Length: 134
Length: 142
Image 1 (cartoon, rainbow over the protein chains, first blue to last red):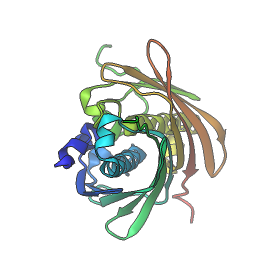
Image 2: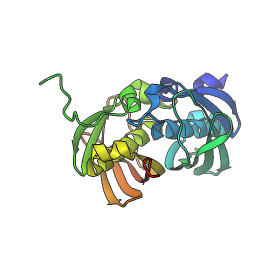
Image 3: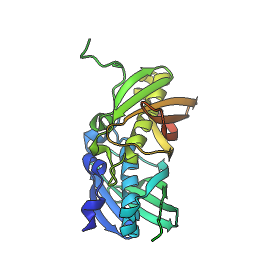
């Protein structure tokens, strides 16, 4: 029911699919096409940062439930390490996990793999969370 | 004149073209990019998706490093982002025009460091700040 609600227009625009969404966890996938590349013909880093941000935002949304609809959370920090590249035809999967949800802040991490085995990027994200009383 | 882009020398990334980013200025040591936010650039809350601004910061800094290294050098030994730290300081909405500027902090033989800023055009509010590290690949070594 909430899947569509959690769908991010930008994430959908670039072609990602939500494969799994449950409390504190989300998995997104995308098959790389030439339109996802940089001038060197390999994956643009922005594809991965977009997928990481979307995965964590959705995982946190699923965990917060109704509170997320009342008081949306927002990414305040992202650190990403790009360990390996990817090319058109490669299938990218990004998993996001919430590490801790506090009253005003939430922490999460994300991993991106290529074709099911190779870890290509790792990310850490921090979200500002507002929980209004009542 | 109207058909030719303002900065024709360096191709934009296909991914940046896809999302609608434009290269406004590209000269040695300086790059400015812009994008006008549309509804498809948003997250489920209707505000700018973080991926939009990280994409533009990555592109702007990759471009400014290319401007310093030179295009021929760049295509012979491409540079690639290995680390990005981004702080999201304020949000933006459809209709806002986002301007991203990037500069190189240090260009070494194997590693390049740089930073980027994203501001909202008009009021100039700082929306995001990024720090990135690039590695310069050595394709031809053998």
